[in-house]
Image (cartoon, rainbow, N blue to C red):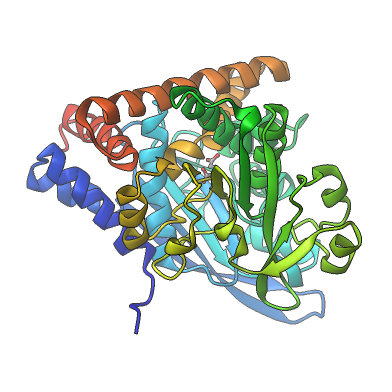
Length: 427
Ligand code: GLU
């Protein structure tokens, strides 16, 4: 029997390895192994049928030594406190690796937006903010969208906070709609950021993107924009996968001549679910869940959830695969990670590859503070610069010390955060 997957245990194991390498002293280890603060609470919401339903909400603030906590809020039926703890820790490393002045937090609510009306979702958003109204804020902890949350959720949350605190606080939350304090490019940022790092990695490997193929897990916000930019670079995506809400399993959609993103989007719901029958009509092969990982491609991009590349499927990765770019947070278990390292597959680790979203959130805060909004080209150029220099800092260290890319990313991130804790006199 496999042990049940615990993302927080995984995040701590990854941290311990970095702490050993950096020879961190005991108090610093103790401080960084666990979140600084955690909130768990109930959110009563009157549903459309008139009855009250109580949802469970979370916010975990892992570390704010480098700046206010930062991180998204997930709406997911299988959310757990340990998942939120792990994600908050990964946010600390993510903000650190791209060197933005923010710490790490994460939030969540156990709920399934597939079965909730907009009004009910608004109730959850407002209730979440009411429970945390003194513990989040532009200078304390700044939420953002994540799985199954988007700009309209952020705006309801902002409105609730501004009503409670009486004033305008656009820096409370990021991922707001454009025109309501949001930044151009924020929607694209995470997916584009993944591909900026893929582009740099291919350059370092002397491979022309036009000669490459990729297979992508997921078809949500991150995957969609990653596919777009990768195709613009000349790459060919032959397979994508998505969760099927009716069947409660995943399917992969393959077209060896290359997927047509616009045609697929026409038959995709707002949660990234692709209509199987219509896809077949468009000439896609519909394959069982894990098929995305078995494809004969150069690049794999897991861009869905945590715990997806595991001991069960890691050996299905085709011998042709040269690179894995982790668009999701925590997609690879430590056991699977070992196999990837041993096989010498070039890895762009999650908190580096997917740091584009939070980097653009930081730009959004900067624009809110100035009350002056940049053109899209300026946002994306700044994003590209940040992602490119973070990639090279990690890659240079990996080359110099002959270590795995994930380890190099951890060494850089953890040492910056540990230094901030020391500078503040905490340890
Ligand atoms: N939820 C995104 C992430 O996991 C973005 C967080 C943010 O913008 O604060 O990186």
